[in-house]
Length: 203
Length: 203
DNA sequence: ACAATTTCACTACGTATGTATAGAAATATA
DNA sequence: TATATTTCTATACATACGTAGTGAAATTGT
Image 1 (cartoon, rainbow over the protein chains, first blue to last red):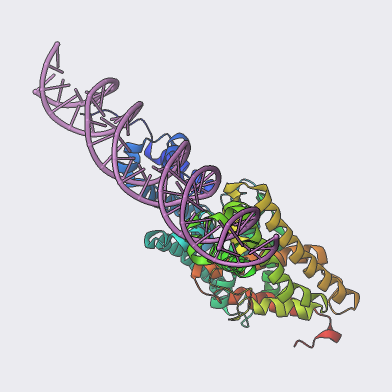
Image 2 (image 1 turned 180 degrees about the vertical axis):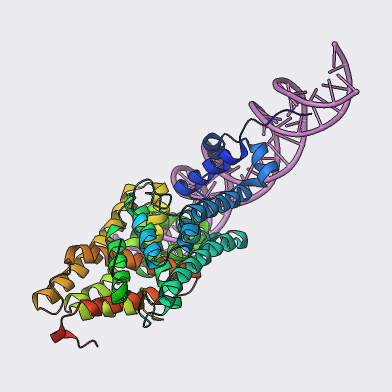
């Protein structure tokens, strides 16, 4: 009993995610968003609560997409899965390999100024989620005696998250989806060195 | 034969550097810059060529300050100096340890959208300079047989630059000057593992 | 066909931006 | 002390921003 919407909500969020990913938050105006997403100003306001609301929806979409594509698969594996995750950071077509870097990194860098709690929380959730998955995978491998006991799983997972940020940052700064390759190689090699002898059968 | 300037040029650039470092480029308006630097709009335009010119001066100042404090000292050392560099990334009071991250990282992330060639070049120069210093130090150590021949010095220096970006990004996102500590520890440990037996005398 | 309802397209508004302009203020020289 | 020169303060301007409002358009139910 009403005029139908001229856009597909999910697709619009996906497009908004890509747009913010590429251009950032402040640099992307509402009028440009209309062009890039197919949304109109009215819809942005009533459906998403304005520009910031749409950004939050984009962050949630990005998180869920990453969760499905690269986080959840990591729960079934150990250190192999972690190494696979890192290799994929610089493989073309992978959801988390992009010349735009990482939406969460870009948000965190920019939002250090914007200071929105909601944006901060969304980004924090993402990084904590990534760290939890690293920790889970490493702990599983350590329980199986696949990696040495000298490895501090908690500290390692924190360090790995920071390394991921480095790869994304390098990718964006260089404008190349694989600019972070050298660090990926270093991390993968380091992870291999953590393995015990009986588990030295890298993929 | 003229009215004296009401500001100290070098000090103003230093303050502008800090201001851009904390707030970013687009988020910091000219009127706020006046308050934070002691400059006035007229001086910003005539002395620096507007906001972007002042930003370029700030980038140059940041680069030179880093060069003096942490790059040049690295030329006299080998892998020890590299490890020292990484440790300092999370030591309070160090010029390259800050809750604001790194001006060059922030610039690179933001400028991926701004698209100013001059800003891009300034940031590129910085990273190339850092990479050159890493490479020089590692090559010297390898020539002295302090690190293994299996280490690819060129690739390693690229990877280390990316790791530095990761530390800075984590520091800014977390709002803590030492949030990147776990990755620093990982890198330092990894560098130690590159040493040959006769050189295993870390500081 | 008509009315109700929702969405769309367009305009308007207040604010903020970077830059440019204009006159006042402050110094050095004559 | 008068004048030339430079810088400062203050205002103006054109543009862009996010948001809000307003009437037309498009659908469903009667």
